[in-house]
Image (cartoon, rainbow, N blue to C red):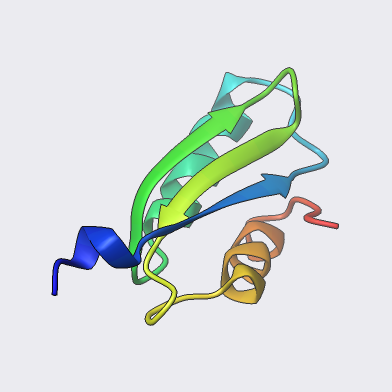
Length: 74
């Protein structure tokens, strides 16, 4: 079975980002979560779009990573 068939996409609200440095920090943090394939972070909308393998990570893991980097993921 192809891993791409098993990917899910999550849209995560992120509070506390104020600049492109924050975007880079959140992007790097989310890319470090096992199972994450791609990350797009949008400063103006205050959100991240993450494609991940649900057998390796879940939404709670993604939010925990964001919060560990010092941002809020309500």
